[in-house]
Image (tube, rainbow, N blue to C red; front, top):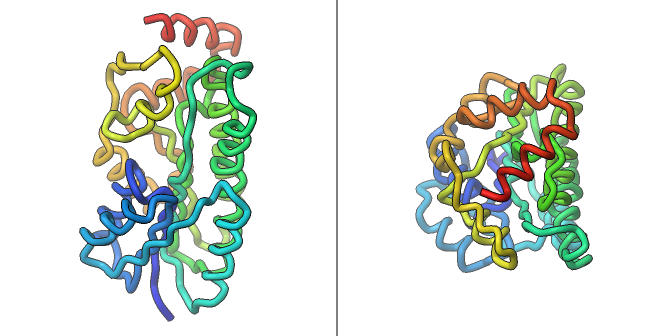
Length: 256
């Protein structure tokens, strides 16, 4: 039986970072890399020492999810780790956001993550681990990032419940909630159609730091990983500060 790792969103950003790091963390027969962009996936795969299997799938679409399901069912695999890094966000008010874009965001950030996880669970054993990538946006409502923040709140809640459900099976679940990660595509893509570019990102993190802390947290079965001072502060402060005040603070930040 093949020992594999599965990473979604693997063509760039945190997904790419996990692909580069995980092959040094465990003995694998294959690393399955999943994303929409075939050329980028092949580029990432070509830099890995482990045997990489690039799967060009659009997980925001039913066809992409079905193709993954069929591929997994056709293989005899032992999944040692799953990293759900696929996702995207857009900055802008809800009234200005195209309905299809909002729908795709929910489908990818929420539905795909849950369905990929469900497909993988029967192929995981004691000692395996799952990293669900959320965001500090999961901790509070965010005007201008409303759909994205709500989708990441889903990820956090889902990860917490899953962590408890499969703890008895010895499978680890960690919810990764980073602050801005400056060397990814998120900020330029999210702000591409909006005047707000969010260039002011004090205490922002880097991919290598986030990935390293997340892998350590997953190995130790920590439920939540908040890499960096900002994400750790928000994890606790948002539990005691009322939403109305949080929104006012966030609105001030948007005006910087």
